[in-house]
Structure formats: C-alpha cells, structure tokens
Length: 262
Image (cartoon, rainbow, N blue to C red; front, side):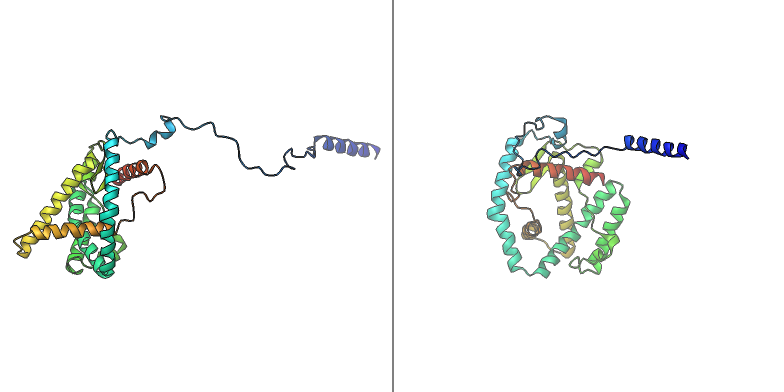
C-alpha cells in the first residue's frame, strides 16, 4: 500500500513538471491607445523587377499612342458619346435591339469564316446555325432567336485571332484613331474583317437589286458606329486612375491573348 502511494506521488510530481507553464505576461502595448499605422514604407518593387514584368507590353510608339489616346478621348467626349446618347434617347429600345441583332447576324459570316480557318468546327457550326435560324425565322436577323438556346451562344472570332492562331505575333501596341487599343496584328486583322464585311454587304445589296450603294454604305457605317458606342460601357478618363493608359493597354493585351487561346 505504501509503495502504491509513493508511486502515485511520483507520477503526480512528474506530471506537474512536464505540464506547460502558464505565465501571466502583460502585453507591452496593451495599455496604449491605437495609434494607427505610421511607419513609412521604404520598400517597393524596382521598375524592372521580375514581379512586375507580367505588366510589360511592347509599346515602342508610346508617345504617339498616348497622343492618339487623348485625341480619341476628346472625340469620344464631344462627338461619339453625345451622338450615342441622342441615339439612345430618340430611338426606342426595341428598334435599337433589332438594329444590334441585324448587325450581329451580319457579323456571323466573318465569325464562321475565321472559325473555319482556325479549324474550330464547333464554333463554325454554331455560327452557321445562328445565321440560318436568325435569317429565316428571325426576320433577317431582327430577332435573335438563336440565343434562346444556351448551346447556340454567340461566338467571337476575327482575322486578328486567326493570324494569332497561326503563330503571328502581336507586334507593337498601337492605339487606332477613333477605335482605340489594338496592336499591329489586330490592326491588320481589322482591315481583313472590314474587307469581309464590305464584300458581304456588297453581295447583299446586289441580291436586293440596289445599284448605288454609296449612301447605304455611309448609313451602315454611321449606324454601326452608333450601335457600337451605345453598347460600350467604357468612357475615357472615368476610371479614376492616373495609370488608365497602362491599365487599358494591359487589359487589352491580356484579353487578346486569352481570346486566341480559347
């Protein structure tokens, strides 16, 4: 019995010696009032730090591009934006929707061709079905019936993406007059898309028996510009950032990279 008591006492002593000690230590700043963060920041990434290289965009024409950016901002403020507002105010929403649908339906042809050139059969098939459905049952594209089917969502392919798909580099960043951010490859691609659309419209006018197409071409160009601006949420100098030019340049470049990978 005595040996058991001694053994229990010994275990109790060992347990007490191994248990963590609890020490009441008062925090030095516990009694101080919050002072906020006042320490000055002495470290930031260097201009050419690897952490910032993902922001790099080839922009050897930056001085000219910045000037064009500002010219575009002025044109947008005093011409395009007010014109788009007038268009929104005086043209009823159903009519504007119908105009957007018709233009989108015409744009299915370049998407179809560019999808074929990139061997994207599914996208080409979707664009073809959309064009067929909207042209016939959708009253020449006025109604976008195809979009009611989730499997027939509108696709986006252009000549710039086709050139990128086949390995052509972007070339230097370039701000297109009026149209905004682009690069050398996409500017050439825009010319290709414009040519396809021109040929498509000429074929349409010829099919309808219209001879003098110049007024129609000009009217179509104006309507297309108004529709594009009315459906574009971006406004120059509205981001509140002093680095808006860099931000737009970066977002455009990365978006186009993703567009080509899709």
